[in-house]
Structure formats: structure tokens, C-alpha cells
Image 1 (cartoon, rainbow, N blue to C red):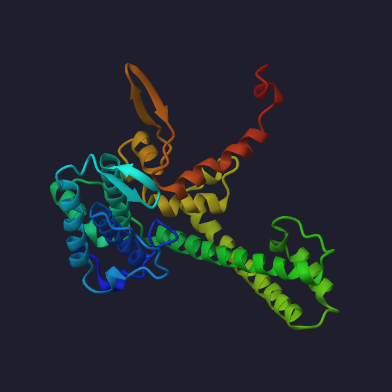
Image 2 (image 1 turned 45 degrees about the horizontal axis):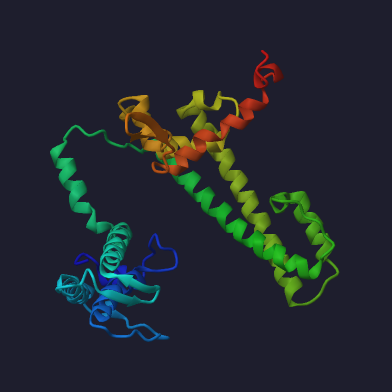
Length: 321
């Protein structure tokens, strides 16, 4: 909490509906809520909750936390009934909810304001001088930059296509555009033709969006062509895999930042989240799916599978071959 800077308050958090300021206000306000409930106060519904984080959020949190701690330390607090917004709950349950909220959203805050984790990372690096180093320079860095730039352009094009489809529902409801069709020059030509005789502001905006879709498609195709020789020189073995195209291989090269830094295939699997997580129940060993790791690499690794499966003989797929 003390590491939160004023410029961090508008930053995004893992709680997508809250920025850092709103998350701080939730934590601080939650403590005040438990203190008020412990004192027997009834909570009114405020249309505009207070902005506790506007000035010295660390001090505001410390004050609120002390008040909540005193509430739960009071004699008989665990047997008392707290009239919470969700209903009447015993003190033990109230304490559990307060602790869970603090731990979960405290972690959210730590992830949102990166400097909090920096000292721990620095200490680990000093303690382990032989840690493998991620290396991304030369042609590999060019690949990463080009892939990231193309991803941004594709994301922008997707946003524009959604807006264009909305306009087309109004202007040409009978025009059938297949899914992902607005990435095709031929389909864009058809849309241009359908809009040719239409006047008005909406039609003007739609034609502008068609032009932007066209330009973004041309540029993203150019970037893919630029990537092909770079990836072919860095990782020709990836391109030789059935279903692994230029973009998939480029994503693997750029995100991995040097496969030689991993001491084993298992270490690489842990990095990209394909290694299952062991779970023990009594004496039974089980595994659950890993939802962590580098999800970009994880996705790229799963792309070639369906294409490769299509080339397998039917006898292999049905178990007769």
C-alpha cells in the first residue's frame, strides 16, 4: 500500500471494473464498513462513496485497518451478529470475509502496481547469480516487435469491424457478411458496392471504416511477409511443422526469448503453462490443468494440432489403424 504512487491511481487492475483508485477505495471502505457494523451502526446506501484514496491512501488504509482490527478483537466479537449488506452473519464469518477480501484484493493491488514486487525479484536475482537470462536482440527482437505491432493492428481492425457491422445492420440489413469476412478485400468491395447509393452521415462513417479496414489489412499482410524471411532464418524447424505458419512461429520465437535458457523441456512446459499441476488427495496423485504461464506461447503451441490432425488417416483417428 505504501508503494502506491499518485500516477498509479488511474492504472488498470485484474478487477476489470475497477482502476487502482477504486480498488483502494474498496479495501479502505471495507475496513470502515466492518468497524461500523461492529459498532452497531446501520449502513445507508450512498450514491457517491467517499474517495478515501485521494490523499495519502497508505495512511487512510492504516487508519481503517486499525479500526477493523479493534472491532474483531473486542470481547464477544466472534459471537456477535453483524448486520451486513448481504444479511445477518456471525462474527466468525464476518472475520473470514474480511480476511478473504483483504488477501484477494491485496494481491490484485500488488499485481496492478508492479513496483511492489520489484524488491523481491531483485533479491532473488542477487541470491541466484546463475539464473538463465532471457535474450531478445538482433533478428529475434525484430520478430517480436513486428509481431506485437501486427497484433495491435489486428486488434484495431477488429474493433473497427465491429463498429462497421453495427452500421451495416442499419444501412443494408439484407447484406450477408460471413464471420471474419471483413478481413477479405473481396468482401470489402461488396460492402463498398452496397453503400455506393446510400447517403447520410451513417453511410459516410461506414465508408470511412471500410477504408480503414482495407488499409489495416494491407499493412498486416505486409508485416506477415516481412516476418517470413526472419523466422525462416531463426527457426526453420518450426516452419517445417505441419500447421505451424509464419505468425505462429514468430510468436513462439518472440515470446520465448531464447529456448536455450530453459534447462529442460519440463522447464519450458512450466514457463508456457502446458505442464499440469499435481494435486494430491490422500494417497492418490492427480493433476489439474495449468492456467498460468505465458498464455501467448501456450496458445501458439496449440495452433498446429488441429491442422496436423486433419492430415492423419481416418484409420488412425478411429483407432482401427
